Structures are given as structure tokens and as C-alpha cells.
Length: 125
Picture 1: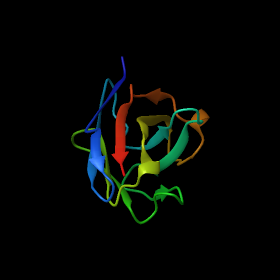
Picture 2 (picture 1 turned 45 degrees about the vertical axis):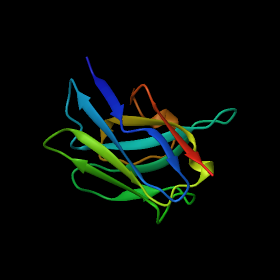
Picture 3 (picture 1 turned 90 degrees about the vertical axis):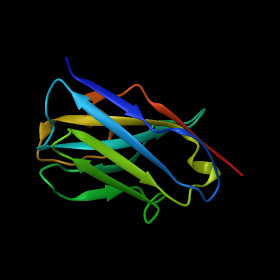
């Protein structure tokens, strides 16, 4: 059984930083994309960042580019999201996701087969 478990969310002041972690178990995703999405109250879930797998390319939404960094530790089957210069509009539940199909990086929710339970990030002004 595949599980993705996020950690690292919390409350931070604007301008601060947080690092999210997502540990996968049940299968390896070294050749597959892993990504982060977020969902704010009353809004749809949106793509934040993704990494293709096999040490491949990364992609970020315009709203976080230059502030967030996605990285992976393949030995630990874990993906991270370093979030700097946080803004109140970054407040959301952040979800880790993994694509069951290797070799592609997509930004749509439909492309990801496995999801974590989410971790709350709250940025105060």
C-alpha cells in the first residue's frame, strides 16, 4: 500500500520560512514526478511545484517561483518543499503528490495517482 506522509507545516509570520517534507512508502518514485499542490479555503487545489524524477527538471507556478524550492532525496524516497519569503496568500493546506507513470512532469491534479493527507501552512501578516 502506497502512502505519502507530509510534515513540517505550521504557523509563521510573513517573510518567514518553512520546510515541508513528504515521505513515500510502499513503492519508489525515483523515475516518477513528485509534486506539491495547495488548496486555500474556498479555492480549487492548485499546482505549486514539481520535479520530474531521475534528477530531472523542476517546475514552479508563477506565484511561488523564486521563493519556493522543491528537492528530493531519492535514497529516502522523500520530497521537500523549502518555502521562503512567505506571504499571507500562501496560507493553504499543502498536499504532496506522486505520479504513477514515470518520465513526465504534469501540473494537473488528474496526472497524480497518489496523495498525502495534507499539512496546514498559515502565514500571518
